[in-house]
Amino acid sequence: MARIVRFHCHGGPEVLRIEEVEVSPPGPGEVRIRVKALGLNRAEASMRNGTYIETPALPSGLGLEAAGIVEALGEGVDGFATGDAVSIIPPRSIARWPAYGELITVPVELVVKHPPSLGFEAAAATWMQYLTAYGALVDTARLGRNDFVVVTAASSSVGLAAIQIAKKLGAIPVAVTRTSSKKAALLDAGAADVVASQEEDLEARLKEIAPQGVRVVFDAVGGPIFRPLAAAMSRGGILIEYGGLSPEPTPFPLFDVLAKTLTLRGYLVHEITGDAARLEAAKRFILDGLASGALRPVIARTFPFDKIVEAHRFLESGEQFGKIVVTV
Ligand SMILES: NC(=O)c1ccc[n+]([C@@H]2O[C@H](COP(=O)([O-])OP(=O)(O)OC[C@H]3O[C@@H](n4cnc5c(N)ncnc54)[C@H](OP(=O)(O)O)[C@@H]3O)[C@@H](O)[C@H]2O)c1
Image 1 (spheres, rainbow, N blue to C red):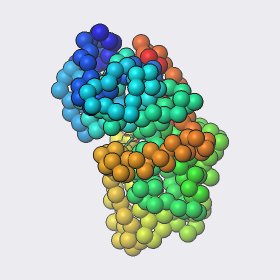
Image 2: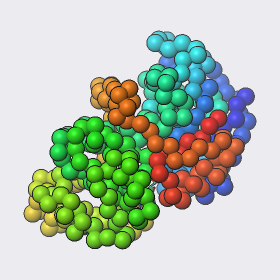
Image 3: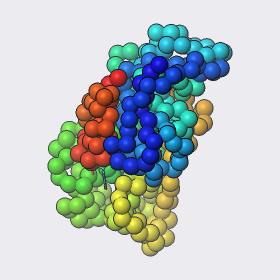
Image 4: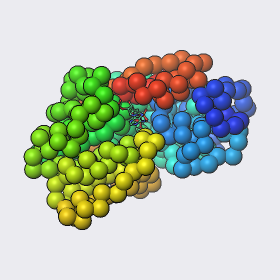
């Protein structure tokens, strides 16, 4: 038996319940992990409230990120042994491979031996944020030295990962955050400049920071900031849209797109996690960054497993700076 988090109906954080369930042994090609820490993601709040790209059958489990110790191996699994410290690459389906539990079972191709010095909490806060930012900035936008890159929702885990990756590449990360309350922390985290989108003229400030235009925009927000973001971009620039945090409609910036031949591109981390070769390259980049210290997961707050409802409330508060972690 193991305790896992499930929800029986869609709704707010209060629909999450911890339930005792029977756990079957790992099947062929699967690994069972005794979880030590979980990383929380906005996608999980969306699936819980019924607005995610995946619609689960109810009751459903939840969760995309975990780190722990290998407890059992299914038939045909090589390269791992019981007792290994591991973390998981976010699965394509949350409902099929939910991570919020004391014991989880995942396909071996999603299991990574992270450097033990990282610790379980940081390991559970690693793969979603760095894979998402890597896939957009390195694999897609080919971000390079001295490129300006604008990162919105900059204090999110993915936003901070993008700032660290941009710095590792020698690019110039400009953070966009809603208010000035997180400005100092974003500068400390490596942003070359910070714009508070609800308090400043976003277009004017970005044009002042990058007079030649911003080549890459990495946006999780959409809504009204879309127009000033496009207006500040350089000819041939690329805007990668990877979230929809704004509840407001997103205007299409027709004349900027036309006049500057901009690329507006939707992006999902599944593009990387679903392609073995690209995933291997991403893992090498991230493990190298963790080893050198260029990449360092920022943990906003840690909650115990029993406080999963409070952890989800904090996730949705928008007050965090970095990743929310739950210890099991
Ligand atoms: N496409 C993909 O494959 C993929 C993968 C992973 C994550 N994502 C997306 O990436 C985004 C970040 O995810 P996360 O889990 O790292 O962090 P998160 O907890 O969703 O992000 C929190 C941050 O988002 C900003 N924010 C919150 N509410 C907002 C609102 N109403 N309008 C504008 N900004 C708001 C705030 O940043 P400031 O206070 O700095 O403004 C807040 O600190 C989410 O939208 C998520 O869905 C997409």
